Length: 215
Length: 152
Image 1: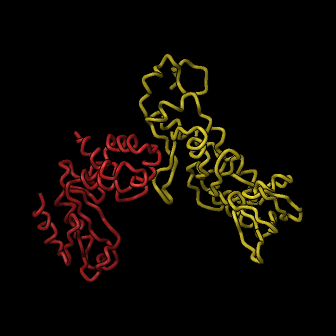
Image 2: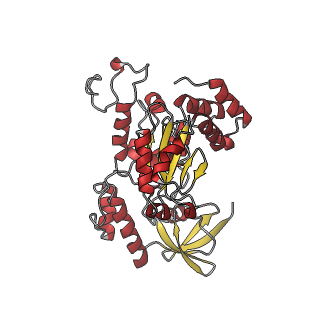
Image 3: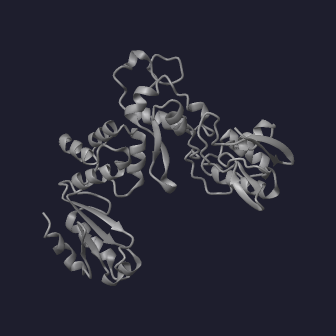
């Protein structure tokens, strides 16, 4: 595979074809903030927090570094005033949904975002899609998906599948940048009839050590 | 509600059970049943080998699909600006009284479903109501209930 050189924050970076800007930056220790990015998953570009300024062929544009492929001779800036402003607003918008998410609070601190700037709509989900994509791509169980659209879009477990598959997996929980998923899972669990093979004596799905009585 | 699973299979086979025909298959089922029963969706997922989360995503995305039972006859009342100023609200109220349901609901006998739409693109005919795809223009509130008498 062919290798080429590009510049990120003034550093010369050697990248292979097919690498994204985030991957290229990571190889030389430059951290680009990400929320919806995961090494095992296909790039998605949902949160846009990784937006960088990239100059190639004489054109300077704003691109999502997690999906944009690195190009030969490209000049990338990951920290500029313009980007700080963009990221600040993005964080503020996400905080309208998940005001207490640790990762967002960290970013808010870094970019001086005001968590109360926008009217609260606490869905506790920023639709990063990590849980959905992890379940589809890595676990291949398809237990969770999106429903509805636009401002009403949300994540939802498919009760039939979740009842069978999620009990001993729950690998998507720690991926969640806002911990919204836990709530969604518990909700579905309450709605779905427990699967036959998981009778009460098999234990409830909670993380405590009860024997199924706290459900 | 009983459902003919062989008919669902036939619809799926008409499209050669191709994954790329998913939306078309769902539309055909919707057209036949006026809604998408769960057994039908399960069958489609199984035969097309499409995960249920994708089917849920699609069926909740498009307004053309319904996952709750709909009436045999769909009533759409235009609430666009032109219809609104010509008394669409009164037409809607009359229809609501005649059918006993509010906009967005379906009656218990599954006869009518009442919906509002934002513009049907024929503003000169306002106020407009559509029943099963048939347009009724310039409906006076008094006539609106009479239109429904033609549907059983």
